[in-house]
Image (tube, rainbow, N blue to C red; front, side):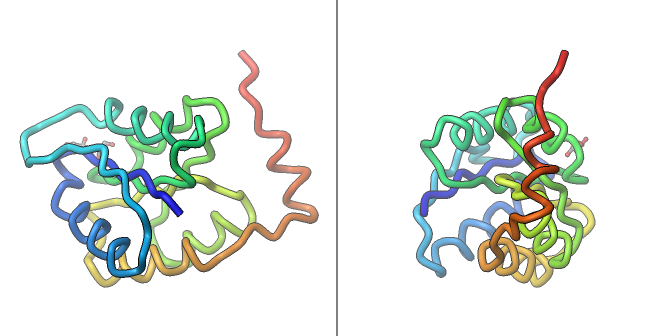
Length: 144
Ligand code: RB5
């Protein structure tokens, strides 16, 4: 599985935690930046990761910003993307089970390394439940 990863400056430090966890767990990684702590604009990186997932170059994505909110709003502008803000490991499981989310967004200023690792574990170990959730997910369409 190939995973696209991106952040802004607020998420840069914990992006390293994400990259290290993915590497240790055998995932192929496309680190889409940034590559230093200089201030950047989160929509630029959210868009890169979202396009890589939407176009099938990567199987799923991990994004980080201060709250996780900015990157999730930006990523969800790309057709086919279901980016979910995960403030806890439980959010990650539910985002997969109920929403079939394909990008997870992490709140770098409101988490720690251990929570990030548990959240990634749940995210990658959990499948979409389908069934009643499939009909609902299929209703999520850009409309205007
Ligand atoms: C950057 O200061 C901050 O606004 C950004 O990381 C993010 O939290 C936006 O949603």
